[in-house]
Image (cartoon, rainbow, N blue to C red):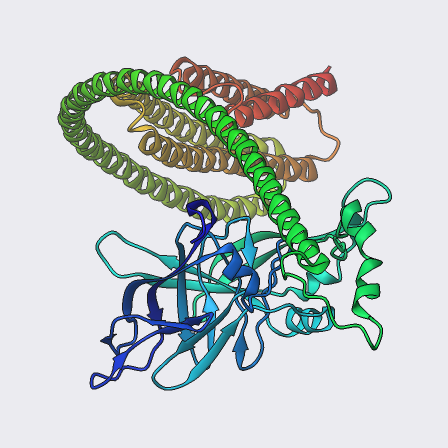
Length: 606
């Protein structure tokens, strides 16, 4: 019986299966065979995802392990997937290994597992109710490895394992392993030691199986280390065995007449060499186990140190984050208080704004009503003033018609008198002095009558202008009073009224000036015509009778000039007009013309 330390325990855990065809009438059993010993799991329900939760274990010693058909490779991990056979690698140790076998179409995929440093090749048979897939681990050549890496990708599945719900497949990604074999090689150890390392890094998408959409991105780094060929271990034989080696052939070839000498089995050189070789193997295995344990201890110590370092860093980071969160919480509390104060201030300001809006709306309504009332009152007064002015215009038109009729009558009488005078002159051809004296008297009477008419027209015009000036002054005072109350609201209406008034005044003034000028031109033409007639009758007679008409013309011109000056001063005194207005400019131009004409006439007379 071997010692307890030499006992080995191989444990295979069968947890669950996936993508099995559902068959309620059948049961599912997983069988495994190792070194002629067959084990199987308990029968479970044949469904899509069966739950086995069973462990299969084989116990053996080192001697049995040496004589078994197990093929060992303690340095390399080999995984190859073919079209009908799946090669898996798992560890031979005293701890249990956890594997999940996923049945999909006609192959099995390794989903997850714990791989320990000491690994051996193992032949495993898994039987399924509908088909049989052989799982085995074997030594493969470089040709098989390249064919496997180039044809079959490594499938990585992403699962969502909840505490209460079933596992859910989120997506899968395929890693092409042939890119690792075609990557650049770097030397693994120091110069002269065999060994190469190939590294490949890439990012691949994780795709959901049903709606082929991208759910995540996988970043991976794959490394392949080639440690070279396995070195052949030399067998060391002791000197005593080497010294006894020549005696074997001598005893093994005795003479034909000598009988064979009996020899014990344990005393033979072969047995001693085999025994010493086995003892050396056990010593090397123990040494190798010690080295592995020391390496494992060093790795575990390094992992513990790294874990403690990361714990310290994590605690420091947590403390820093807690401090930041506390500061942020205080800042948020302060901000919240400020926001509450600001909200209260905004509520108070909103109430104040609403109250001010109501007051402003009431004040605006009252002001609007006052402005409307003032506008209506001003409109009525303006309509009344316009009606009065229209009445005055109508009266002036009547007066003008009457004066025109009088002038027509005077013209007719003048024509009659002209005819009578012509007849009288023909009769009184022998008495020119009497005839001329009578004609001068007649003309003087007509002149006096025309001057009287001109004076009455001028007086009526002056009276009209005085009345209009008073109306303008009153309108200006009313305008100023309304501007003080609502200047901003009534600016447009006042501008329109002012424009209408200016147009009306300009029209009236232009008509009056045109009438006065027409009357003066008629009188001047009449006097010139009479003067020419007298000159034709008298010939080179003395010019004494002509001095009276000239004197009368100068007096009428002076009177017209004074009237224009007085009219301009009256309009300027009202405060409505300025020197830049068109009416004042027209009056100034007429005054300048009259002064110029008087100066020229005075120059000619002198």
